[in-house]
Length: 143
Length: 80
Image (cartoon, rainbow over all chains, first blue to last red; front, side, top):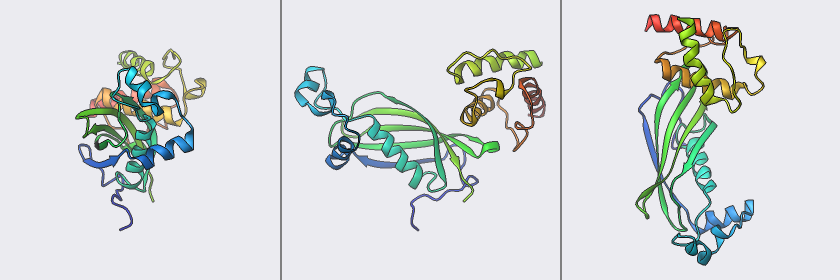
């Protein structure tokens, strides 16, 4: 099977959960810097970040959006899923090398529009806290 | 019943729309620039959750304004 998740709208039920681990490694960080060019000091300068109360340079919150996109598109629901909205709150910082556990739960199904609502959290396993929470709406295509 | 439901819809519209929208029975989607298909999904998600109902495929699209939507909600509440 080419994808870990391959759910149709009928397969998805309220209360279903799925989780997956992601790694904020140097390859992801450098690719983000290279692609989008956000070299704001807080994201590239350890000394500056420490002077502002952090342990070191903090990772871009939008990296988490990338992980979420991969999770929705390949795993849950998978290839039939189309991310419509994402209301994300970055609660605490992530640092280079941190491992994150993305946990998602279906909280609502909109039968009339074939849309599911997911509550998602990013637990930072290295820092031992929830780094971000978001609520997303995903359309589930027919095929 | 309709006016009570529209009062509750006003709270939902206040949460969903960025710009203030005054909800009246005559209000329809084409009168509000921000009211596109994504906003419609957000409205339906919030309405189903707030009222504890489920719409059937196509029935919301058949309503012409907020008053008819409120009547549809009332019917769903009676059936639940």
